[in-house]
Amino acid sequence: MADPMVSGYADALFAVAAAEGDLATVEDELFRFAQALRSDGELSSTLADQSVPVSRRQQVVEDLLGGKASATTTALISMVVGAGRTAELPAIVDALVERSAASRNKAVATVRSAVDLTADQRDRLAAAINTRTGKAVEIKVVIDPTVLGGVVTEIGDDIIDGSVRRRLNQLRESFR
Image 1 (spheres, one colour):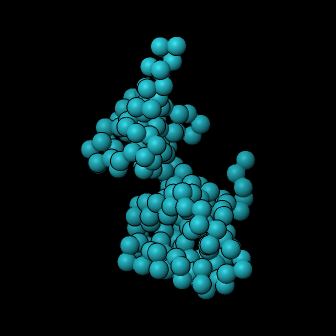
Image 2 (cartoon, rainbow, N blue to C red; image 1 turned 180 degrees about the vertical axis):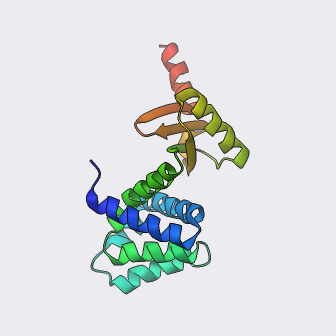
């Protein structure tokens, strides 16, 4: 069962982003920020450090996102950081992304790739996933250099590993 605090924050962020009229942009920016938090331990610990004054942690958010993200995204992240919920921010954003996709009758497919995908590649991948799983999906790309090539797709608990690394491992196993 989902954490009620995480769900509550996700619902609130979703409502604000929808009311501001740019849900898709805010959702994408929040997703990218959450990925940065997941991959950068120093940033995550700095923003979660309760010994650092709230105003300083919020200034870090402003400095990082100023001019690179919408005012709505910056304000929402700043609010969550100010509330002392930085550690939960990735889970909150994941719940928001799921809620947003569900509002469009879609599931979220998180795709790990060594490089960003073009709009055409995303569309073709979404169509292939729909054909294979019967689910309409929205693609969220996470840049992961360890993938080497190809993609690893997660839809809920299902993982479709089409990476070069997996293929190399299969080949290695076939020679043993």
